Image (cartoon, rainbow, N blue to C red; front, side, top):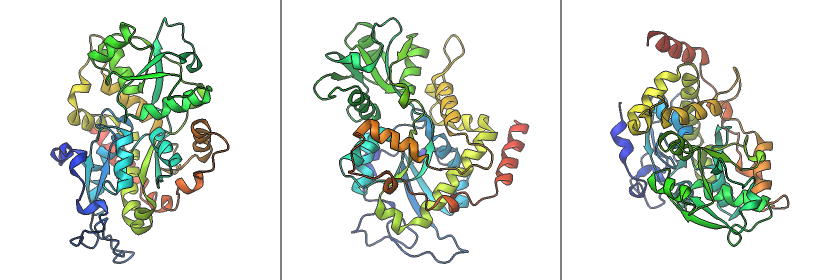
Length: 374
């Protein structure tokens, strides 16, 4: 893969790079995301460097497969962008990095974003990535627990305190009339590994809040069958977007539009040639693509779900915001009367026309030619 070695950079080490928006960076060059320099002209795309932060690895954050594909297919380069893709360690931590100016753009889960917005953080979504919610609250198949309201006085396992599932769990409990901080215990039990399996099997926790990748890991590798008790109102909510701050959105709209356009191209490509995009994922994280005795891998399950949640109809707008669904999530998470942050200020569609200004037929032709030759 052309730049796979770069993805090993740790999130904690990116502070201070030119693309991160440090006011004190006297070395920022025209075209860097930090510089705020004007575009050199409508017909010239100035070179720019920018980082994209993922909340987890490529495979664990399956909805971000198109970002890796944009890198590998050369679409970022086509937009004259030098993009660093930086895997991280949870959506909560990524939100903090974005707001602190250490990560220009990131893909944290909606739960962590909404929690941040409720706390008054300045966050902007300029491109909705996926329209399928990828978190749940799970119990073993034969558990008597049928809904989240029955978790009062019990203990719920989480992956880690900064995981995106924590905000989702809190929202679900609030919707059920419970206080997340006092009515339900929370215990970090890992990300679908042996420790997680043991905690669920021996009753250390009564439920497990996690993303679907942890669910798939437990089912594929551990043989554990789990049932999702998250309310149905959550199931079709948006999950992730390209998130930045108002400052960067206003300073570098051209760079962000080109970034979004490369992602949109990759989404369309993968829609018509998913096998090639699967190959990119396998090379990025082969351990999740190891098949069990039934020939099923965690990576394939994660990709299939993410692919379904990011596929759009012919002619539809890539990155479009389904405002009513965000309003629904806000009401679930923060209450109908919460006016601390208007959804309209968070969702910005100013760049979507530019983002979708590319030759779709050419991308489809490229994808179908590659698929036909594979």
